[in-house]
Image (cartoon, rainbow, N blue to C red):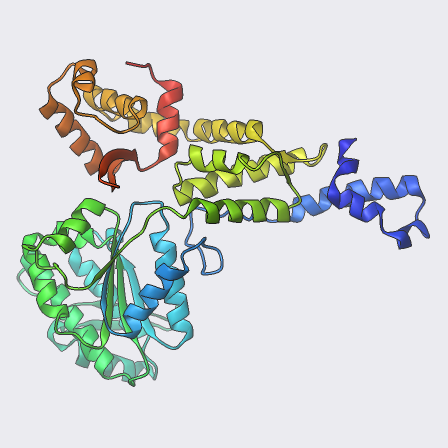
Length: 434
């Protein structure tokens, strides 16, 4: 079997001390069996679909450091980047690093809360969890810091968990919920001022654009009015709707203009991602057929970190299965096979998504794939779609609203990109060309 040529088997066979106690033929069989067992026990090094730790994310040290510095300095930072690019993992890594240094850090995903008052409740309860002292003492502090909210606090002894509910009034409107949020931000600043000078306090809100979409135009001005006065609390607001967040921070007519620093999260540099992939495959004792094979993974995943990890994960699993009877080698065939399997695996989801689109939207997506996302309002595209430029613009806008497409503006050029590049691969394989 070619498995005998695998480095793991060769290393085992080459051990001179084993020849003294195990016959050569038996040693070969034992080496093969042990090699298979080892492969079964090795953990897949390519992670996706969860928040990664600081040691797991690729080449994001500068981004993590900027979040940490912002919180330590009581500053303001807007982190802007598409979905699947690792913003959440960056924020988690920064949070872990800060908490390791004793900081009070609260992190929330705004999209997880249907209304602003529920987010407010979560922030108040989160603040209680991070205060030291007895239950009675913590309750007193929270009621003091967030006095305007008149919070009702409960502590579950069995779950060791705080819950909070802000004071209820007869008013239940968007404006009232924005007011509650602003008063919560002020309460966080009061909490921060009560901490020792060497103890940083930070509030991190992911998918921050949801707050603005829910709260309306008045939310921007109200939030700015509050946090521009805060000196002790560091604020980090992250968002995946890049155009919306960019407009909020770069448009001189918007309240958040120049309120803080902005950090745009782009793809991981290819040379760094290739090195990471190579290191992990080789550490797993898999051979690489040629240097360009790693570029194929990046090409098919369009450099989107989440999808790169997903495709590499699938390749690794296929190679491990191959290792039971052969020497595993990462080559073009393995990568294309892994991609095909992923696309078919997600076929029910993609089919449901596709069937929920109008005929014009479906045709628009096909043209995005065939035209590479550029010149989508050219006469050629208009002619192929059979509709006017205004219809094309409206269709693209609706697809962006649904989180299927996004705009990428680099080097003076504009290109439409799929949020999930594997959906584009599905369209290429299972739909009719125009």
